[in-house]
Length: 80
Image (cartoon, rainbow, N blue to C red):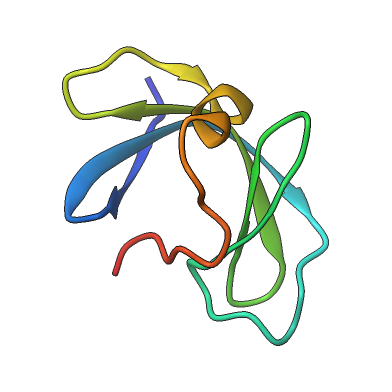
């Protein structure tokens, strides 16, 4: 059902849950600007999204916060 998709390191990354949050104006759209207890914060053109549930290729959907604990995402740009 509604799912968005982007890429991370050239691999598909499905976005199963997200919510709007305040962004940081100096970041590039798609750039990970924070990690919270609830998810991964990604800058958009006019604000930011906190990703709450993601799925890597071949994997199952997991909490974005758990995904962020498995690798350093700060400064990584999704969709690049």
